[in-house]
Length: 192
Image (cartoon, rainbow, N blue to C red; front, side):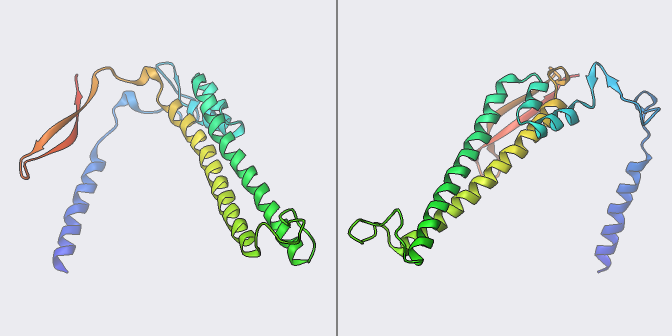
C-alpha cells in the first residue's frame, strides 16, 4: 500500500512539472472571439465542412474541393439505403403473408391446390432474417452518414499546404534481436 502511494506521488510530481512551460508570445491569442487566419488557412473550415456534409452528404467533400469523393459517399449511402428498403419490403411481404395465413385467408405463397410453397415456420424464419438484415442495413447507412461527416471534417483539418515535405515515413522489415524473427516496422524521420 505504501509503495502505491509513493509511486502515485512520484508520478504526480511529473505532471505538475509540465505546467511550468510557458507559451511563446508569437503563439498567444490576443482575442478569443476573433477568427484567426494562419498562412491563409481558415480554422473554421472543418466545422463548415462537417456541417455541409451533415446537411447533404457529399457537400462537405465539395467544400473541400475533393469532388472525386462525392460519388463514393453517394454510392455508399445509396447502396446501404437500397438494401434497407429492399429488406424492409421483403420483411413486410412475409409478415403480411404470415398474418393472412394465421387469419385463414389465402396469401401469395399458397398453391392453387391448397398446399403452401412456404410453411408457417418458413415464413417466421424469413421474417427474422429480413428483419435482421433490415436493421443491419440501417446501422450501416447511419455509419456511412457519420463517416461522411467525419471524413469531411478531417479532410478540412489537413489541407495539402499544411503537410511538411521534410517528414518521411518508411515501412521496413527488421530482425528482432531477442527472438531472431523477422518483423514489420516503420521509421518516422524529421529533417530540420
